[in-house]
Length: 368
Image (tube, rainbow, N blue to C red; front, side, top):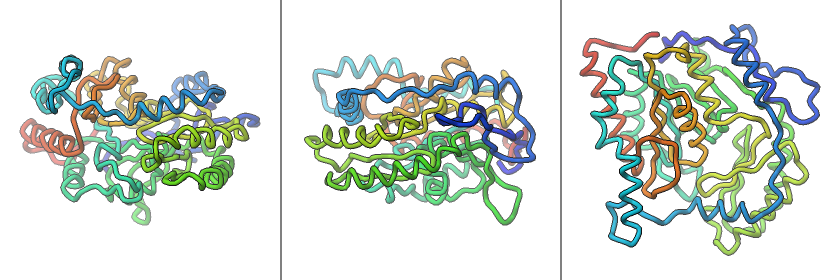
C-alpha cells in the first residue's frame, strides 16, 4: 500500500463551509496536486445545511431500530423465518457466494474498504475496549499487502489507528471527514489527505462539553469525541431513559445550528451540517488513488452500521462495486451480500487473499 501513487487534493470543497463562513476554502494538504476541478465543484454544489428535525419521536424510533432482535433464518425457527429467507436470498452470504464474487472480480483490481466497530471488532459496551484480535489484524494486513485498503469509520482516526496498528492502510475517520494515508516520511506513519470539516472544530468542542454536562444525569450514557463528530452511546442506557436522553441531546443541539443529528448502531451521531459521509469518503479515495474512471476496478465495502449505507449507495449508483452488510438480522440495505459477524468477515478476508495469491502467485505488493 505504501507504493500507491496517490494524487492528493490541495483544498477541501466548499461543502465544508459552516454557517456564517466567509467563503474561504479549507486547506487539506498544501503543496499537493488538485484532484480535479470537476470533483471539487461537484462537492461544492452538493453543500447545504439541513435543519435539525424538531420532533424527538424519530430519534427514539431510530434508537429502537438500531437494536434489532430478529435473527437470520439459520437461527431458531420463528414466525419471521419466511422474511429471513427472503432477505437472505436477496442478500446472500458473501462466503457462500464467494465464487460468484470472484467471477465478478476477474480481470479487475480490487479496492477494499472496511468499517471498524462490528466489522473488524465486536460491538462492546465500552467503546474504548473494542479491540480487534491478532488474527483479524493479520487478515487485514494480508488484504493491505495485496489490495489498496482503507478503514472507513465514525471513530476518530487516531483512536482507530491505535486499535488497528497498521500504517500501510488508508484511514477515513469521523465518517470520512478526516482522511489520512501512508506517509513516506519516516517520522510519521500517516499524512492528512483531506479534512473537509476543519472549520467546525471549535463548535464541535463546545457541543462536546455541553453534551457531557447535559447527559451526565443519564446512567450508562457516554459521549465520545471523535474530533470531527460526536457520538452519544446509549448501549448501556435503560430503554425507559432513551426518550429523556434524546430530549437532552436535542436540547443541546438547539444552540448549535451548525451541527446535525443522525443515528447509528446504538449511538446518536452529531456531525457538521455538510454533505459529507462515508460514501463521499469512498468516492474521494477512489479518485485520489486514480481508480475513479476505470472500468477494471472493483471496490468492495464491508460494514455493519446504518452509516455504511451511504457507501453502499455510492457503489450501487456507480454500478461498479460490491457492498457487504455485516448483520445477523434482516434490515433494509443497499448492500449486495451479507456476513453475520466479524468472524465471518475475517474468513472472507482470508479467502480473498488466498484467491488473489492463486490468481497472481508471483505478485508481491501491487502497484497502480
